[in-house]
Amino acid sequence: MENATLLPADRYVVISKSILTDIDRDIIINLYQPLIGSFAVSLYFTLWNDLKMTSFMSNDLIHHHLMVVLKSGINNIKIARESLEAFGLIRSFLKEGSLNEYLYEIYSPLTPSEFFNHPILNVVLYNNVGEKEYETIKNRYKTPRFDYKDLVEVTKKLDEVYDTSKFTLASNLQDKTSNNILVSERINFDEILSSIPKGIINEKALTKRVRELINNLAFIYNIDTLKMTELIRSVLNEYGNIDKNGLRIVARKDYQFKNGTLPTLIYRTQPDYLKNPLGDNSKRGRIIGVFENTSPYDFLRFKNGGKPTARELKLLEKLIIDLELSPAVVNVLVDYVLRKNNNKLTEGYVETIASQWKRAGLKTAQEAMEFAEKEHKKMIKKETFKENKTKSPTPIWFNQNIKDENLSEEEEKELKELLKEFN
Image (tube, rainbow, N blue to C red; front, side):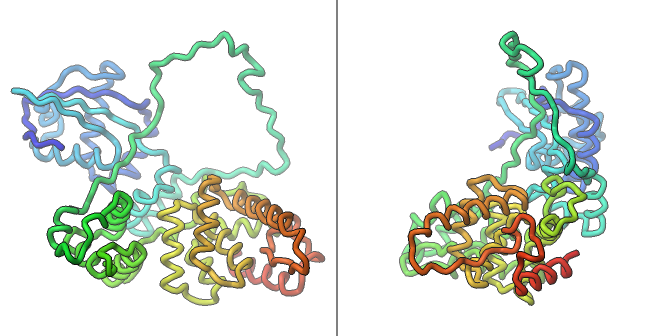
């Protein structure tokens, strides 16, 4: 942690950790400026400009140079620099001395698709600019989709064109990668322990995983240490340990009570770059469209025939935030489980399947549907030896062709209702 006071005479050097382009400049202005402000953006562009003289590393400079260029005091520059650090655009290093020396690593921003699929930045932008402006910005970066249905890829691979044994790799080339966005601890755990009597809380209750959960909840629901201490006290069990699920519930309820709504993640639809190409008008293609263009909240609301329960909202939230499943994959999962589990979203059953799908790296509705079908076939093979087994119900989309003559009257009705509701 930096304790030294930043002075105008302190020296600094900027190092490029990415290949910065004019496209990055556009992304910084449109996506990051609403989050960090125009002054922090000006500082970023100034550090970038310092680099241009020598490409990957600047000359030795002093912070007074930044004060002159930006026409601002040194404290404002420090605050702006910290904003850039918080959003992964620079990393700062300090060597203390009679005059301190700083090294600033500058990184390119996330790509638009990465930004809009980021569980934190996406929501922060929405909350900062509002729904109308958010949609305007998002549409600006919407990637055109093309129908590849009748096309066969004929692209040659590198080893089909060149003798790769003659190639040597340069080790000093820089990747166009962004700095990781680190969410530091928002909660003072020492203060929590000192505020709750030892006889009530077990000092070993704050394990690494519990601390991570607390910090994540604090970030998502904007909870400070004092409020978090109050919430933790309300969910301690008889052994002085923290009920993690209970903490999720009270944190969510507290946020909902203050704001009248929940964080917007469960109301998001599938990001464009994870959607199927346009043009597939088959029934299966239209079902995929439903999964892709419906938020998990709305999809479950349709399946329930009414508003999801608090328990179901918590489960959706967990699938998206903790397991990082995409909205379309969550919708496929919900549809699959309701069909297989007698219209019940049993938490343990859902989480078991969700964990398997996360390990499989499923990102799209198509991938999730095909994976579910494959796993179902494995299960059927294992059960062939059982006597008097009943056929397990499956979702409509298990039938790749979804031909009308292969559907029961009940399935045909369900399909029509699904497509009518969302198309």
